[in-house]
Image (cartoon, rainbow, N blue to C red; front, side):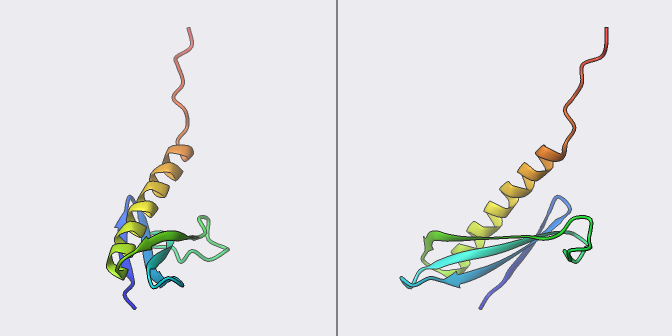
Length: 90
C-alpha cells in the first residue's frame, strides 16, 4: 500500500489510502507539527482524520485528495490561531 507524505507550512501530512467495500479508495490523513512526534505529551498533538465518502478510482488519486484536504485543514487551523488585528486606540 502506498503512503504519501508531504510538508506544508511547518506541518507534516501523511496520507494512507484505504479500500472501501465498493472496491473504491478513500483516505486517512495524519497531521503533525514538523519535527514533533504528535504524541499526547507534545504541545501540538497529531490530528488524524479519514474520509469514507470519496470513492476514488485509484489509491494515488485518494492520496492526492487527502493531501489537499489536509492542506485546507492546516490553513484553517493557522487562521484560527492568528490573533485578530486590533485597531489602534484613538
